[in-house]
Image 1 (spheres, rainbow over the protein chains, first blue to last red):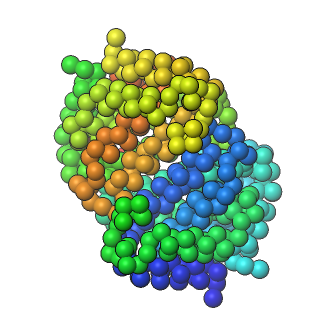
Image 2: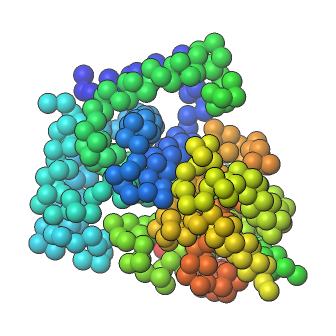
Image 3: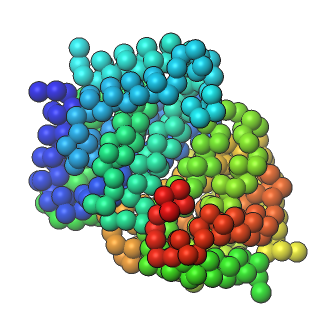
Amino acid sequence: MSDWQDLINKLRQFNEERDWAQFHNAKDLALALSIEAAELNELFLWKKAEDADSQKVKEELADVFAFALQLADKYNLDVNQIVSDKIARNAEKYPINKAKGSAKKYDEL
Amino acid sequence: MSDWQDLINKLRQFNEERDWAQFHNAKDLALALSIEAAELNELFLWKKAEDADSQKVKEELADVFAFALQLADKYNLDVNQIVSDKIARNAEKYPINKAKGSAKKYDEL
Amino acid sequence: MSDWQDLINKLRQFNEERDWAQFHNAKDLALALSIEAAELNELFLWKKAEDADSQKVKEELADVFAFALQLADKYNLDVNQIVSDKIARNAEKYPINKAKGSAKKYDEL
Amino acid sequence: MSDWQDLINKLRQFNEERDWAQFHNAKDLALALSIEAAELNELFLWKKAEDADSQKVKEELADVFAFALQLADKYNLDVNQIVSDKIARNAEKYPINKAKGSAKKYDEL
C-alpha cells in the first residue's frame, strides 16, 4: 500500500469512529484546508522565516496534509499521480531557459 | 523510497533546474500554500460542493500538495510521521464518546 | 450619510441589478473575502514588501473592502462602531507597557 | 473628516503608542488580513451560513477592516475612491444583461 493510502485509511477510520462524514463535504474540507494554511502562516507573521517555531510548523503542516488527503480521498485522486502530473505541466509552463532565476508568473515570463 | 520522498525529490530537481531556492524561504512557501488553497476554494465559491469542477479541483489540490511537500522538505519532516502523530493527538482531543456526531471544536466539547 | 453606508448602497444596487442576492449568503461572502485577501497576498509572494505592484494592491484591496462591506451589510453592522470597539478591546489586550516594541500575541505577553 | 480617515487615525495612534510600525510592512499587513479573513471563515466551517455566531462574526470582521484600513493607509489610498472605482469597473466586467442571475466569473460569461 502506498504511504498516502495508509494515511488516508487512518483518516477515514478516525472520521468514521466520530461519524463525521456528514460534515465533510468537499466545500467545507477545502475551507478547513485554507484555515489550517492560515494558521501555518500565522507562525511567520511579523517575523523572518527562520524565526518561526518549527515545532508548531510541524503541527500546522500536519493539519494541512490531513485535510488535503481527505480531499484527495473524496475525489478518489492518487496523490503521487496528480502531483507528478502537475510537476510535468509546470515544467512546460516554466521552461528552464525562461524561468531560471526568475520569480515571475508564467504569464509574465 | 517512500512515495512522498519521491515527490520531494522531483520538486527539488524542478527547483534546482530553475535556480528557485533563493525565493523559497519557509515564509513565502507557506504563503504560496495558502494562495493555492484559496484558488482551490474559489472552485466552490457561490456553489454547492458537488458543482465544483473536479478536473480543476485535481489541479489546485496538486498545487497545495506541492507546496506542502516543499515545506516538509525545508523542515526535514517525515510526512507519514507527522500526519500519523497528529491523528493520534486529535484522537485525544476529540474522544469518540464526546465528539461523535458533533462538529464542535475540541474546546467546546 | 456615512462614507461606508454610501459604499454599501452602491454595492446593494450593483447586486440588485444583477439579481445576485441569491448567491450572497454570509458563508460565501466570507469565502469570497478570503479569496480576495489571497489575491492581495499573491502580489507580495516571493518579493519584498516594497516590490509589490501598488496599482494592483489598490485593486485587490478594493475587492477586499467590497466583500467586507457586503458582510457588514448582511449583519447590519456599523463599520465605524465595530472597528472603534475592536480598537478599544485590543487596547486592553495589548497594554502599552507590555506590548510596546513587541510582536508577540496577547496570550504570550 | 471621512469616517475611514477617523478610523485610520485611531489605528495609527494605537500602533504608535506600541511602537509597532517596525513590524507593519505591507507584506505582513496583507498576511495579517488574510489570517483574520480565515478566522472569520472558521465561524462558518461545517455549518450553514445562518448558524454562525453573529457576535463573533462582528469581532472577526472588525479585525479584517482594521488590517485593510492599515494597508489603505500604508499606500495612501482613499477607501471611498478605490471601492467606488472598483464598482464602476466591475459594472463593465459584469454587464447587467449578461451577468443577471449568473454566478459565473466575467471571463466565462
